[in-house]
Length: 429
Image (cartoon, rainbow, N blue to C red):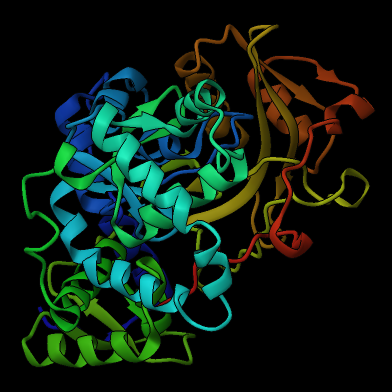
């Protein structure tokens, strides 16, 4: 049925269903279900913080429950696996065939980096890049640390670590090198023909066609969204997104809708369904598509969210690595989780109710036990910080642990410009 209006609750259910919530789970999740879930999302954002677990593992756990992380590693970390990395949102795993959709972005980055504000930066690594290209051609794919090892052996004049890493990242942005899986958690770099069919990136759609495809995929992935919501998914320019939306609306792929409480017009993908109910229990990565666009999370869920890993410990409000708690179609609170692998426990360092909602502690306790077991931990420990901490501890049947200052001793990564919630590292092009 064609819809021209959606209630706020319907919009939440549409979006969560499009994101893969509310579906029956297999126990344990299979490689097939992992692939299907990634297909619905379109990408998995990568982040190096490993306090609870690395970010790209968490969206699949939120949607599928426990699964073998080694199975995901085989899909994403291997040289010729079905997924590769690129700056699709931030750095992200995307289906290998989708890399063609970003060829225009590679070209746009090259043009931008040749501009007056960046020309010196690019020219300063020209020799490095020539040497890197020759090294990869001669010795095959390798991570930056292996290149540094070669540097120590060769004693070349250009082999500074920062020069090597900068040169590789420049080439990666432009498509001169591509990812060839990961070694540990370190990206492996390769020349395109070493991991992709000959001419793979040359056989790419023109920019307008690629952006139209990305806009369609983004809207399918979020179900319903404003132009800003849709553009953010693959970090597209607003004007490019508007043109693609118009084309897709004319083609009947996107339907304009008015969502209760939203000031801006929205679009509904024709594949979207409007569930009558939504049953979901999850803790969400800070880089989960449900919450990664903070303006959308606030508009849809009345949930103001900032991660605080970049905030000095005395200024943190909710904790170091705070994950939103999703129950049904609402974000009802947040928990600061840490996998204490040395002690074998999942530590709930803070647990907070949302201002307008309250965590169902019994349901969250089930989710936390599942998370601990998935992490290979023996139990869950709850400290006495946060408005929901006592209820969560009671539901788990564990005593509250007094908070100690050591809980905030995590070393914060260096944030761009010192922001408490890092800005996109690559602007829309």
